Amino acid sequence: MLKVICSRSLLFSYRIVHEIIMLMKTLHERVIYLAGGCFWGIEAYFQQLKGVLDTEVGYANGDSENPSYEDLVAHRANHAETVKIIYDNDIIPLAKILEHFLRIVDPYSLNRQGHDVGIQYRSGVYYENDEDKKIINSYFEEQNEDISRLFAVEVIPLKNFYRAEGYHQDYLVKNPFGYCHVDMRKIKKEERK
Image 1 (cartoon, rainbow, N blue to C red):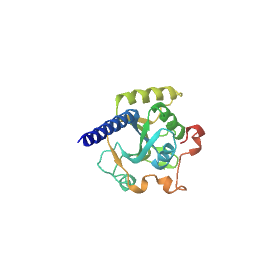
Image 2 (spheres, helix red, strand yellow; image 1 turned 90 degrees about the vertical axis):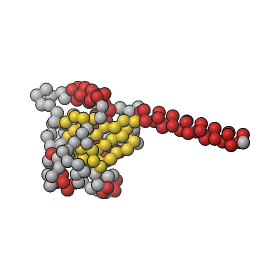
Image 3 (tube, rainbow, N blue to C red; image 1 turned 120 degrees about the vertical axis):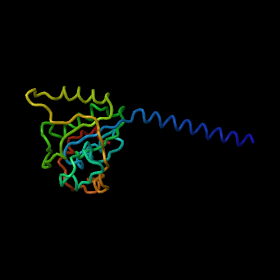
Image 4 (cartoon, rainbow, N blue to C red; image 1 turned 45 degrees about the horizontal axis):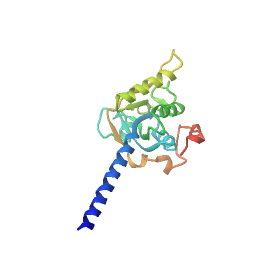
């Protein structure tokens, strides 16, 4: 009987410790959504950074539910090609993510990045909470040096996000010679995983 109680007690203790570890892990985990032209390159760039835990490409902030890539191409949907980035805020804070974002997009370009043109290729930073909104606005104000021109980057709350089709996920990992407007050489050696 004592043996059963002890093993149950150990199992209970293990579960509590495991839950505490998982809770501590999620305290540092944050999510931000970035749109900056074709999502293949944005995703591939951020996947290489220390502190980025996971990425997922999809369609954000449009007016219809569950759009497909074909809906965007045919202009039946007005979502932005977007990358959901889950990151460890202790390793790579939001301001650093925004620094990387501005390295690889032209923030003055409206509905265009590289050869990609159209509303689905607009640039945007979509946030889920007011704390992130303050960080984003403050960072962009500091970086927008040319007073005569304002950034053409949407900074708005995330309205919706729909996961893109499977063949778009990790596209450049599966197709290393696929099209990409993002210069991966802009990642410094010490920033890479």
